[in-house]
Figure 1 (cartoon, helix red, strand yellow):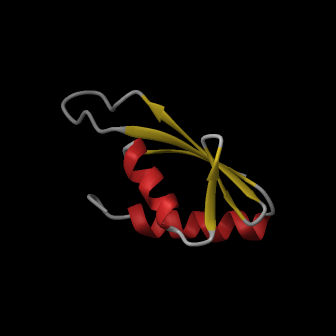
Figure 2: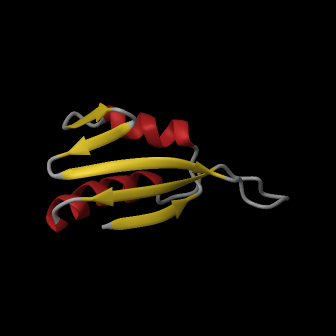
Length: 81
C-alpha cells in the first residue's frame, strides 16, 4: 500500500494515469492490474509557495503497487515534472 502526499495538481496526476495504456478509470478511481489508485485534492502548501497538493493512495498486490508507483514517482520526481 502507498499513501503519500504530493505537490502535484489533481489534474496533472489524473492526466498521468489516463496516459498510461494499461490503466483504466472507473467511478473516480484508476485501476492497474490488481491496484486501485485514488487521488484526493488537498489544501495547497502554505504561502509563499501555494503549491497544489494531492493525496495518492494505491492498494493492491505489492509488485503491482511498486510498478505503478515507480512510474508515477519517476514522472513527478523533478520540480516541474
